[in-house]
Length: 219
Image (cartoon, rainbow, N blue to C red; front, side, top):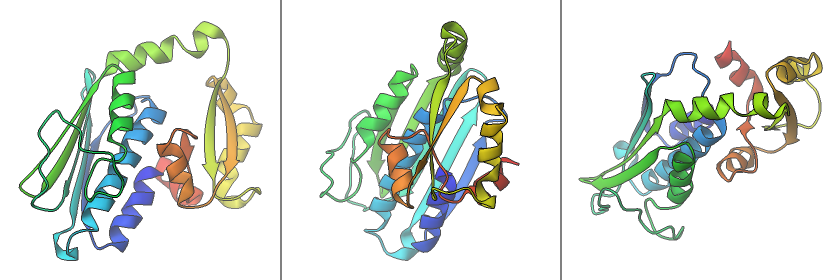
C-alpha cells in the first residue's frame, strides 16, 4: 500500500521512479518497514518538489539475503544540500529538503537491532538501512507464541462500510484466518492521504488507500 500510494504521487509530480525489491516470501516486520518507507518517501517528495520536473528522480532498493535486510532510497535534491554521513539534518519542517521523519526512521531501525545512515552530496540524498534478520525472527518467535495472546494489527481502510473492494479483508477476518496466524485485525476508517500518514506516525500498522489494487498486488 505504501508503494502504491507514493508511486502515484511520484507519477503526479513527473518524477522518474525505479525499484529493485528482492525479499521473497520472508515474514518481515511490517510496522517498522512501513514507518521507514513512508517517512523517507515523503521526504523524497518534499525534496523533489523544490526541483524542476526534469530533474526529479528517485530509486528504491530493498534486498534480503537471509542475514540482513538492506534498504536504500536515493532521490535528487538541491545541489547545495550537504549532509555528512552519519548525521541527521534539522527536523524543522519549514526548511527545504530532508530532515522530517528521519528520527522516526532511525528509531524504527534501532528497534529491530539495525541502523540507519543518510547523507547528501552532489545533488542526491541517500538513506540506507541495515537490519539483521535474526532480530525480527526472534521477535516473531517470542511474540504471540510466548504469551498466547493475539497481536493487534490496525489497518486503515478508505471506507467504513463493507464493499467488494474490501471483501478479502472482511472475509478473512470473519473466517478466522488472521486469528490462526496470531493476529487480531482492527479496521479503522480513514481518508486518503491521511491513512498513509497514520502509518508513518505509528497510529496504524497498515494502510489500504486502494484495497482492490493492494489485494491484486498480494495475489
